Amino acid sequence: MTIAVALDGPAGAGKSTIAKRAAAALDYIYVDTGALYRTVGLAATRRGIAPVDSPAVDALLKSIRVDLTFNDEGTQVVLLDGEDVSGEIRTPEASMMASAISAIPSVRAYLLDLQRSMAKTHNVIMDGRDIGTVVLPDAQVKIFLTASPEARAGRRYKELVEKGMDVRYEDILQDVLTRDYNDTHRETAPLKPAEGCVTVDTTDLDFEQSVAKIISVIKENTHGAE
Ligand code: DC
Image (cartoon, rainbow, N blue to C red; front, side, top):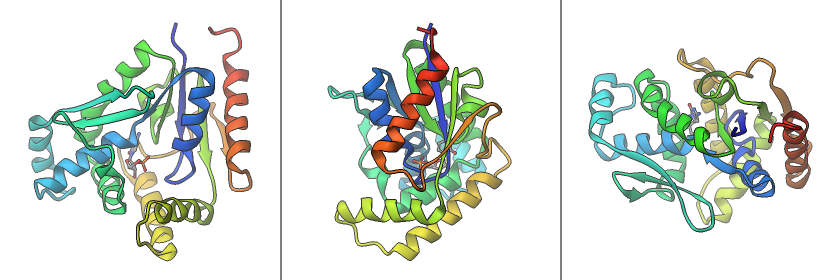
């Protein structure tokens, strides 16, 4: 039997860095589902398709291929028509595009099987917005990872500045608030805590404390499952 950990929460709560480290410690694979929405968003951007134009997006989905693979270090690589776009999907523009396009039901349906298939063959920590509610409702562990908008914007700002990007904290905070609104108010699979989930608030936790907390929640809830 494989073990699935559904890790949901708002943008910038630290899901990906925390989950990556926890997955390495537990020997699970880490699946970042946001990368899939970002990739569909990138495909739309490249073809000049607005994320609100559902018929054009439907046609786009029929003509692209999105794949998830892992490199030698075990890091996820996302492919758009065979091209590694893992770096290109990380800009603030790609974030906003992903948030907008993820509200379209056909996009969510298109990515559902790919996400579920990853959990069939591996022990996974899967990070997203609707993993515990829609993608893997039977996951053994469901965690809702959150932090205040200011803390989340501060962390994302630092991350982008470290990558050499020229960004302003106020803009990042505004992006966080806009994405929170989009992600929690869309009709299909809105971001919300799954029933029976454990909520972990990292506002006052540093990275190591957050990782330790996530690992302890997983261990407590999978005791004897392996
Ligand atoms: O986790 P992220 O910031 O890379 O996600 C990008 C966008 O994709 C986010 O604004 C909402 C959307 N998303 C989603 O709707 N469902 C998921 N499971 C993952 C991401």
